[in-house]
Image (cartoon, rainbow, N blue to C red; front, side, top):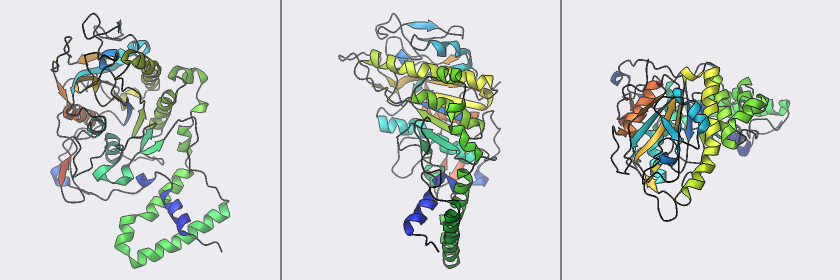
Length: 419
């Protein structure tokens, strides 16, 4: 008889990045939460532009001004809205996209700004807030999803976590979708695998009989069962983009980010609640115009094709697309032909999920001032996204240490989402 070693036990119970499989252990203060009207969106795709993209070279160009640099503006499919010349295909989809051009963050540091934009809260040493994707995974119906409900593609930051909701809502991380996902195929034959699971069952039963409360908290049995279900699930095929038509793969772009966006569309089709696709490289302190041109060549086909693809498949109305970074770049061009960190007025693009496309909210100062017109706080932007997902931003939880905390301190923006 084969014995189950400690190493084997840990491997089969962890199964790489599968903390998402356990059920939540936090206490929900139901009495504090009145009913909330459901939004349209059933899933969210976040396109994360890591490093802080220049809004002036993307969604808020300023041609002919002292701060605009050499960047030209182009017309779009939305009347009266122009975007930077590096996004011609996105311009064709602007009637589906809304721009919030006056977002103001209180954090100008990369790590702190990322935390704020992904969780809706500034870093606080007393609590770890859940990322937006973790909230979607926890709050939205599970349905028959057998794979993780929160997936992060190409991201390497530490913010894509469940926070006080629990590690089971941490993002399941993958990298370039052209590569196979590790640790999902058994490396042993079926008889030996079955025997290992039988041995594991003996260990679990013995532990549960001796320490029932601890067994309930660890939730090893539930974790293993869900992991095994995932390993044999047909939904894993959603990660396999090679079967898509070549014309569609060409349209997304033959880049890790383009492939990630295509995979994101496939994943929301099978019930994944949030997919984040990261495109780092926007920290253009030096050679801003050259660096941003390189990045927009990757972003433009992927973003435009994602919006069009979702629309053609009837998924855009139920999928919210959010395109953002941690902040923008300074109106002033520095001596290295770059732009520095600028949290005082930058752009976020949204599409689908009931968002009213073809509009621009807010306006930054063409002279480069720090006060945009119709300023939008990160709190209010975050509350708007939650509301579009049918999640009450004022919903209150009781954390494991007994602290009541709301999902957001903001209020949804009027006129951005809804019929």
